[in-house]
Image (tube, rainbow, N blue to C red; front, side, top):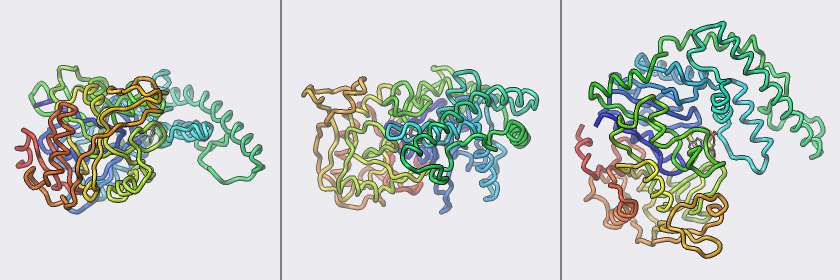
Length: 458
Ligand code: IMP
């Protein structure tokens, strides 16, 4: 099947990286289509750990082409750090391609992201502070700097000049606001605290220095810059397999997620077309990745969130700390109302369920099958209204848990009956077959369950 999209089915951190890594073995081209270095995943290969934020992990296969599509926002300093890190470890990055149309995260985007969050105070979204939102905002405002601009020094300088001026103004205002708040809080002019908040004039906002820095990035990235849409077309027209790798997840989607507690891009399958430059008919399969429970980082509604020993069990057993920010993730039961919504929105053809091993040792497993609104109405569907979602109570189906450690299981028959019942319940409820199940962090710790089981042999 030549065009396969992989998306997160919950609030991110579902373990997409591992699923992409497994499917990449069968693909020719792997393309990231949205997000930026707000994403992060760890791949363990031959006992070595690799952390990725921007480059598709397919780069670890020497014969695969990996592309960063036009829909990605790219911080060149982070990308170059990743390239250098891989090179130091002997990984050849010659097959990395970067879309000339991808937008660049500039230093002022990072500063604005942080300053905006600080200004929001208690109402902050809990962004990763990597400049994602401000960069996409500039893209929509047509003030963005694109990868191709790195190739023309004159254009680059002119564009930075135009984009920078309103940022300096905005950051000055945010800085004044911050100082006022400090004063009100009796902190006087004490320095310290959140040093990352912009205090203009800031040397990081110097037009000349910034332009020089980005020109030098351009020199280094030039060999990788390409027309990545064309790469996709050529591969697809040639019946080669292209994997479209999503970052973040469905419920963080700018349009369909729990707005405003979302990211600033569209992580759903439909966005693969826009973010990689292919047509809907190029997509043959959509794989959704969901954890066997649920997690969320940052603020926003999370109906099945647990604040008890089971939640702590998930946090500790699942090592639920962010790869990008190190933040503790909020944990809860699997939410089938939300998952069914994600299945339909992405028109998923397959599901991968990760981290099933984390549930072992929990006596009774719960799965949210409907919500109840605060007025008592039964809600079978994911509510579109923010206020309703914020106050719903989930209602659960209870299933018996399993005691056994399942980390060694490699086939469906190896799994305890209770684990199989749990998976069956999920699949039946959402109406999509489960193709693979993760039973541990290692690459081999998987159980292929569906018709694609043959992939396991490759
Ligand atoms: P931003 O994408 O940095 O603007 O953050 C917006 C929201 O998306 C915050 O709640 C983040 O915690 C969340 N978020 C962004 N990237 C990821 C991710 O890769 N995994 C999980 N949550 C994410």
